[in-house]
Length: 413
Image (cartoon, rainbow, N blue to C red; front, side):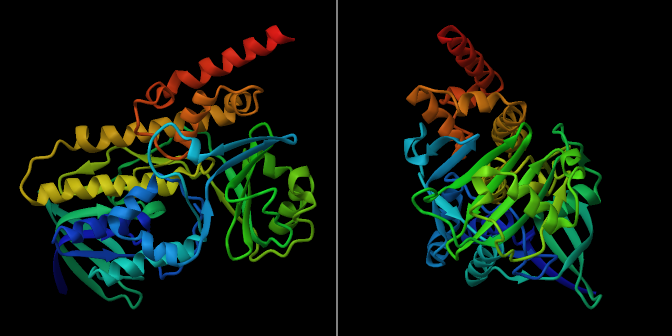
């Protein structure tokens, strides 16, 4: 059997894998990526957050992405019963990037993968990992191509950025149930001929359709828009017809969208995803680290996926480099704990969203500007800035604020 030797094997050519591969490659180590699918391939997670720009910059990807002319994103707009709450990233509490992009992921991910290949990192597409054997930190990975040809890759370290594929967790029984309630989405891309830049400038729009049910509206620079309804699977069981009929009927019942998207052309038959939340019992082991969705995927509501993917890979890449250089790394303290800080902050906001706590905050009258800026930083992805009280005290701060608003409003009445 053919055998190849590298310093680092990266599983997955999405944002997590390519960011890690680029940073480790820049440090002078031999890196190889294996990817199960052929690119371009469709995936959701189309609205980025400013914090991921720091990882994309260090990986050397920003200029290539900028050249593609994707829709720039400067904030997030929340809508409920005609009331609007805007968060502009320029107003955020944490210093950092105040803009990012909204991207068709098949194009975006291919740009990252093509760019890392130009840097000298080979990418083997349509290559499936079938087995991994560890000998302390060294490993031998067996892979198989489309023709059934098997080969082996010897590596000093493995970065698993395989996303929903969850390669190492599945091979070594590391999967762990998420504590989030299972949810479902029905979505498509549409030709958005009625989009108005006056009403919807450079930002994502999130609409509260009814309690626990929300809609994403993500415009792209190519004139198309991603639209999806998200909520309890029981809600979708009440809908009649095939996927397209269901989605058109739902759009017709949403006042904010009905006129704009009436009889709109759908780019593809609406698709369904459900029960996506997942986590792992450990984020690292002797000779490997998990990054991106392989560690934990929460929910699409605050577009955290690509940010957690790129930042975890940025963080992990530096620790891998130090490991290969002979340092002893406390992976729990230097990787798992920081990552869980970010994951848990997003988790608190996701739970507060579905519980209705954020409805109270987002659509309150007379919002306090400095508090809004702190929450804006979380929505921008700066969930590691513990100088922000709404990051540091994420488990309690939102509930306290919502109670204060309710009390204030009751006294006014």
